Length: 393
Picture 1: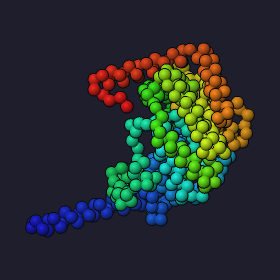
Picture 2 (picture 1 turned 45 degrees about the vertical axis):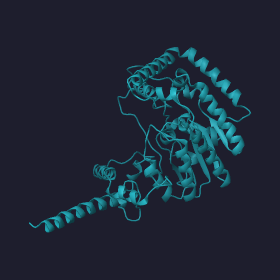
Picture 3 (picture 1 turned 60 degrees about the horizontal axis):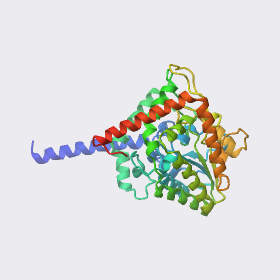
Picture 4 (picture 1 turned 60 degrees about the vertical axis):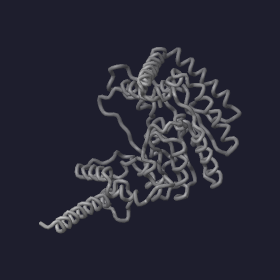
């Protein structure tokens, strides 16, 4: 066979294969990026994608009046069927391990593409970290102002990840593996597998978070992200409600054990001061602390059947907890959980939490010592690795 003819055949075969892949990804469209041409058969399955790329498409194609932003905590912990979310014009745009600068960019993009009237922004101390150790797909999403649309569409239609997601959705369709009820408009439904020990989940999560909690420092650019959100919401007459997520009491004990509690408190002081200067009409609720729901007992070692009402593990709360939060903020529930904080009451509030913590530590000494051991082991192991040449994040 002549080389020229051989090259033509190879080229045609390659173009044919590329076209088939692109058409497959276009018709399945796991990210819902091409709603005018994709197959409607997959509509009930596309909501499973919850990364930044998929969230940006959700923000772009909707007509949202209410939006939720934050980390994986409100992503899994907000109940889609709550009264204040009863309209289909509500979307949940929370993403895993979000930083405040990302949340600010996500808010700005969503504001420009939707008639937002209310935004719920759930804050975590970790959102203001300077570290970018965890790399996600923000740069590849429409939230990124510098995004190359040519590269974006190439990845969506020809990329290995997109093809893998399309294949998985196709299998789900064949096997009729539908998302859980309530998985709509970005709301994520999480459940624990039968036989799972929640104490084991607590242990794994606490160990994974221990070093980060001890080493975290607030970054100036991340605080600027919050300032930008406050200013934009004020300028565009969007009701902005802020809430600090209610982690379990043992999660807070990681901050104590890692000698980072004072920075956590200072972050709260700085946040209320910023709100007072930039947007005093904005409400900030603090649900961290040692309240009755946040001190829920962890099942005993070996218990694989008991399920906690308010938590999956120390970091992530259930929709039942999410409903308590929303009831308190919007329905004026008197459930003695959480508090509005301002520059006028912040010191009194922080003192109350310290007193709550002292009482909890006395009554739950064994669990507190468990967290202290985990923190000490994690810091010792990290220091040992650093001594052998590893860089401490």
